[in-house]
Image (tube, helix red, strand yellow):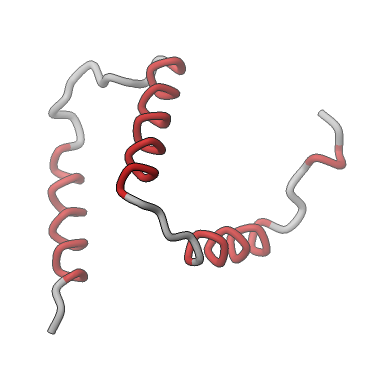
Length: 74
């Protein structure tokens, strides 16, 4: 691997990604296309669909509860 292609400052990259993502305004269709593309990539990598669909459901439920509590407007 070429050393010029390596990430030398992960924190800088993380801040750049957060800044870039926060400026993006996606339509529903664009977001759906991204999710579908990610699903297809997971299939190509052999990690989707999961062998046991219920594996990790407890983590999913916990995350959903956290996200739902954060999205409530007061």
